[in-house]
Length: 183
Ligand code: IMP
Ligand code: MG
Image (cartoon, rainbow, N blue to C red):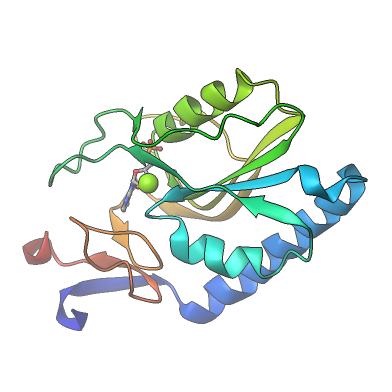
């Protein structure tokens, strides 16, 4: 696996520090908006957000629920976004809840746009978006915005810390690019 890595974009230490900082921001926001903690719903987008979400939720000392959702956006080996569609059911009891979507990376924004509009149909109290990475795309801004962004990265394909290429490299602890011949 290590020989497939071209560049380390973000080290383990920088990820750890940033996740702590985002956790502190979120904790501040949650404690302001929340008299009734039990209305907090954190929604990690599988599978890419699992590592980030696992680290982030342990910074949040609130009574909250975790609801996993799946959205598919990179079918097969293709690296071009084909748009996004739900690949799991959405929880049906989001009315009046404060929902935080957690994803690994904001690229075209179609994953977040699809999820957000479906959540909003249920009249939640709020919907916020937290992503570890946002790609600064060559072909313009994403169609959805994130309220919390860990790092902005250049328009390159990255893996590690939950992000995959064809299902692999999610367990690598840093954010890295791959050599051409690994792709
Ligand atoms: P979007 O719908 O175009 O914003 O794409 C977001 C989804 O595409 C993310 O949840 C990732 O699963 C995947 N994705 C986008 N860019 C990358 C990347 O550089 N590496 C791995 N997965 C990516
Ligand atoms: Mg994803």
